[in-house]
Length: 182
Image (cartoon, rainbow, N blue to C red):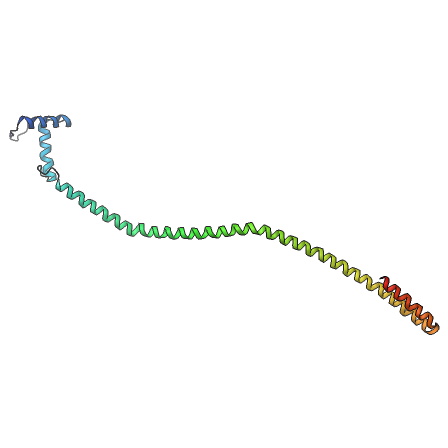
């Protein structure tokens, strides 16, 4: 054994049974449990009479306050600015979605407009062909009229010197009937 002087403590049978139960539960000898209790109270500076353990409560409250302070600091430094940015991002996304919805509506209308434009262009093509046809007919009429006119002028020049008035009237009537046939 050690060279320490051993001392004894007297306690009742009830306390002895409690010490036996504690030592059995912890799997240690009664002397070892007793020495560990002394060491525990010495290190933690706890009062064995203080069942509520005010020092522990105060330590927990202090740590709780520090934790709450940390959370509030994080809230001010990180959470609130992050929430603002997220709100701003959400608003931006709403605007983007609104813009896309407008484009989708336009994409639905564009095929209808293109069909109407194609119909209009088809009608213009028909009118253009009609105008071209009419212009070619007009050119043909001009050529025929010029031929008739040139024939009239040549016949008049030929008939004016030699022919009678009756021949000139017949020439004029023939020319008018040819023009009417155009």
